[in-house]
Length: 124
Image (cartoon, rainbow, N blue to C red; front, side, top):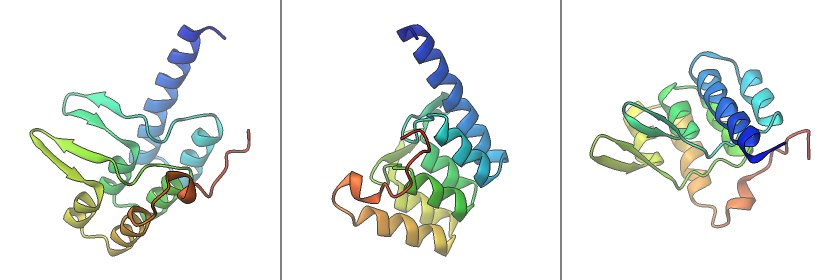
């Protein structure tokens, strides 16, 4: 595949992943990860860049947060809304889901990004 085709495919997977996080199932999220969706690649919409993990936190679905963390999503990234930038753990506290707060804080305490990548896509 050419670089242009690869870029197009990754862009398509990125938006499909966002839709799966917002309106799909955990199986949809894992399916897209298996197909090569980058769990750390933000989508850019009117409000600015949105990372998949931030979208999962806002969707208030601990299973989707866990799926992304297992797939290697970086819990140390920051979420920006307008002019406010905050750690994902603060975003989780805003949404007040104790399970999500626990998962994000636990993942933040790990020092090496590779140590929290437990899930391996089928293609590896």
